[in-house]
Amino acid sequence: MDSHPLPVVVIGLLGSTLDMGKHPDRWQNWRPSVSICRQPDLVVSRFELLHGKEQTGLADLIRRDIQSVSPETTVVLHPVHFGDPWDFEKVYEALFSFARGYPFDSDAEDYLIHITTGTHVAQICLFLLTESRHLPGRLLQSSPDRQRGGPGEIKIIDLDLSKYDGIASRFHQEQEAGVSFLKGGIETRNRSFNLLIDRIERVAIATRDPLLLMGPTGAGKSRLARRIFALKKSRHAVSGSFVDVNCATLRGEGAMSALFGHVKGAFTGAVQERGGLLRAANKGMLFLDEVGELGLDEQAMLLRALEEKTFFPLGSDREAHSDFQLICGTNRDLLAAVRDGHFREDLLARINLWTFTLPGLRNRPEDLEPNLQYELDQYAERGGSRVTFNREARSRFFDFALSPAAAWKGNFRDLNAAVSRMATLSSGGRISVEVVDDEIERLTKSWGDDQLDDSHATLAGILSEEQIAKVDLFDRVQLERVIALCQRCRTISEAGRLLFDISRSHKATSNDADRLRKYLARFGLGWSDIAFDR
Image (cartoon, rainbow, N blue to C red; front, side, top):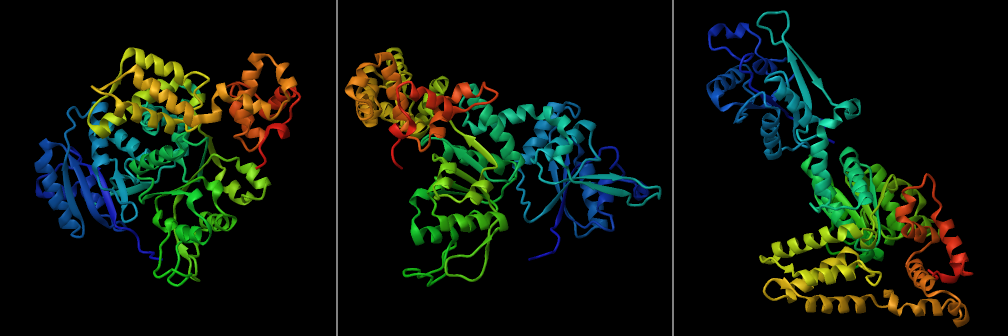
């Protein structure tokens, strides 16, 4: 591995007072920007010098002086308009714009952020942007020494964010922007979901450990993973690509080849070498959706790749390397899969450090309206024309969407498809009641046995007609719904978490499985009576 140090790039502000000097005796003065490039133990490859537009002459002089004492240093001048240099908001905005537009490459260059020059406001802004990783470098502080005309002293500070908890409040607005980004700009109203996204945003920025996203199909795991990647990319926390893999599509020898690559001749049909998806995710992010579908052999290889950053491509005796961050998604109960021998316990322990469960659409009724508007906006963006509901049609759709009759099996995928169909079939850009009624009929048929009107068959296969007749209609409707949900779950614990998702958050301790057992016992039922054999 190459051990040569990376080229050093200094980013700093022109000091209108400290860097000043036009006469020949200016070399007897300590001038921070020039003195940095005179350090015997620091070779600066490039100096990115930010200056006000009115300081162009001084900036050009500093550029020439630096090149006279350090010919190996390229000086790049950046005129920046601060307006009032003591206005925190304006200075931060100007420096933030520079940071967002600069082509950082942390793998190829070592960045030092000089905070000695400029106003105190500018120095604070540089500190904040460095701490938040918008400027992905270390702080550089310079000071004069007692020797007149000497290069002075420098100190490089590598920020340890854990030591600066007190400054976190200054990032509140930036944090809110990050959370809004993870939500796709949707103004969600569900308190539990908003708290969840807030925590995911903080964890995603602070760590490269694996993340595990759990939740039902269509809850938004894949979209959230992409947004986490985009957020980390904007903070220069990753430099590679986002690689999305649906593990349910990987089977047998093809799974090994797709994930880890293969060499030519590794198996019949391997006519050329294949790099594999893990290598494609190097320095980026790998999202393994439906990770519970991976075979045990692939799980073992993945664990080694996570822990050692190395693995063997299929048919090769030479290790390959990939340093990626892993996000896993699943709608399965992985603890139950471990007990059943279908998932490795050591791999689950490795990916279960940060686990977040995304609720389905039925658990977020407050968010139906903002998500509906989001889908209409997305349709308008794709098709170039805006479609809206008339008042009666909108009311009709919400009455259905929030009723027990709406199963939302596919969660937000179902909502997306419904809006796309209604918008496409609407003439004049207005969705009518007739279009809504047609869509309700379509959804109802597609959900089939999940409809409460047809769910009597659920009880008929479990209780006798005599037993059913003794259950009040009120309790029967609820019991049918509970059993229908339980039959979609692999364990009683998973079913309990879904059924008591809201109330469990208000309890100091919770045993959702026990609550469900007691409920079923009222009707003489146990888990084994209602669960499918999986």
